[in-house]
Length: 355
Length: 245
Image 1: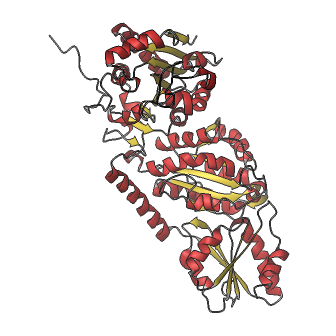
Image 2: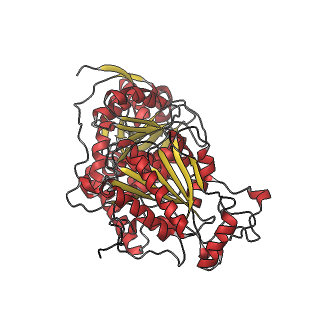
Image 3: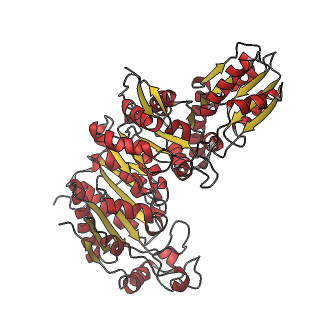
């Protein structure tokens, strides 16, 4: 298929349809409302469902209900909205049903701003909602990857029967880039007879299915949490994604950065290469599971003296970097989070201080 | 002579955890009879609330989802929108539906979502131990209103059926009670009608059922029925508040 020029938000909507997700519930919030404006037109063309809910709280449970009924379903929102949906995300994780959430992150805390940010890293990877659960978080660095990851998210949600998040930012949602859509998937959950509450008549066993997160018996609750933990451990083994950039060189400094920020870092690395300075980049594509081994090996390469995490936040992923580098190298941080994205020149200035 | 009375097929054999004298058992049975009579068990999905009926799925033998507090109408919306062929009902108490879930029920009703909401109103929080609800009567004692509900600081009880009846969107909204056999029979008809409207794909349907809570009211089951009759029914008038064309 030929490349088309598309805005990130619209491309994410199209990607969901190409992945066979014909159910979309959402509440408007900047900077991602174009997903809803796109899908309200597209869903009727493919016989899909579009509904604007009354709040992100309600949308979270519309997603839960639809997912519990065994249908592919997605919502998109931005930071404050994701805070409200986090209640439902916790329930969805506990009840083990597949659902896809897209967070086009804007600046926070509070109302913050409407410009790009990566300030929701903690929320996405460390919790957000209550209880012992994890979100599988994919972080695209542009429109093409947003499409690919959105499509992949449905398979992952079904493989692990739980919530999966695409964590983009306002830049990825708003910018236009040439994008190519992969082949349609059009598949749907194959194992749903075992768990979906979609009417007993639909399954051979004729046994009822129960979608729930309440386990009053401590042993039962412990078992459910162990089942969840086993899935998260499997994700750590099987789903880690990352990219190394200029990591074959004898770099003196390793940058860790993801999403939009990593693309600016790449530009800075190219500019420094022209000046004869080698800098490496390790870009996590999955924020959870975090590429622990990859970051550790890249950081502890003999030539590498310093590590710096560059983020559009006040320093969030850097805590994971510090955790996995285990004190073997000094880990620094640079970030801005008002909505301005650090320029390549600024990054070069910061890096040069470490050389 | 053949069998004239038996447990509905959709009711499980489990003993309920409800307190002696609680009317949840009666209302469960009415819902079960309606499901059986309409032959919809195999395509029905119930939504359990948070509150005394949180374990409702233990007493119904059909597919069930369990919601967070107040969110059952949003979950029902999600299911019904993606699978309109399923029959979906929520079963919610007054803390769940009229307090924390007010937003979800109003908007589901106003969108005309084609599911059935069974709203059990006993004017108090049961599961958490007798706290004041939006439906608690003026002067009625609750653990968070030990001197009785003070309407000057907490407002007057919310009449959900009246409120939803005011919406312009067509729907079926009725208030029933289960304090006397005659009322139980009427409530049965209303619940069945609510499901029938859904089966026909006609409209949102809402049945408020005035119920009792002997444990948290501090009354015997019999005194509870009398108290409800004397105190709740004059304020929560029974009858239809909206009927589809």
